[in-house]
Image (tube, rainbow, N blue to C red; front, side, top):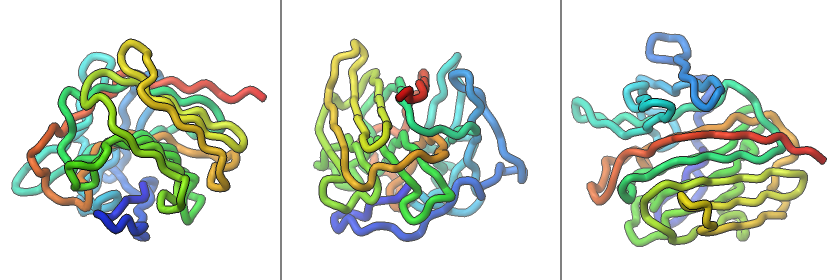
Length: 237
């Protein structure tokens, strides 16, 4: 994930490729969710985004759901991320998730597509809940990288907590984002037809919860997010 810098919003050129992060025992740890296998990101040292330390301790299962958390231990903070073992291309991606209380202003929740073999912007398509360390910013963000090009990002205020579904429809030349509440009412939608729309590519789906710039929480909100279901429908011309 390409991270925004506070206030200046200058691109972060330090990118850590997720495929190079192994499990804490030197091997990739896996978890099953919504019928797919997902790799748990783990790192002993701080890596991007953030940079943060990532740990399987920040990934827990509750029934069919997965809970992402930011955990503090021995004066260190650990973030959570999983990413798909499967590769995806054009289609519709649907994530149902929950935020039980508004997130801390230094916390970032992400649902995004990323191809780590396609620099410099990795064909990245993002939905994020983040205030980037500034409590008053709109927390919801639809983005096509590079985010600092005019027209590539859409930020908005909406319901602070609850059950949500985020839908990303990716087709040739167009991206359509939609956020729904728990009753399938549309809270916000955004259509992108710009030059940065990725062409057909093999991307992984990522879900994460991490600390902006690796800084400690501001203690003004929550540090957990629940993943309840994920669905992918391939594009049919």
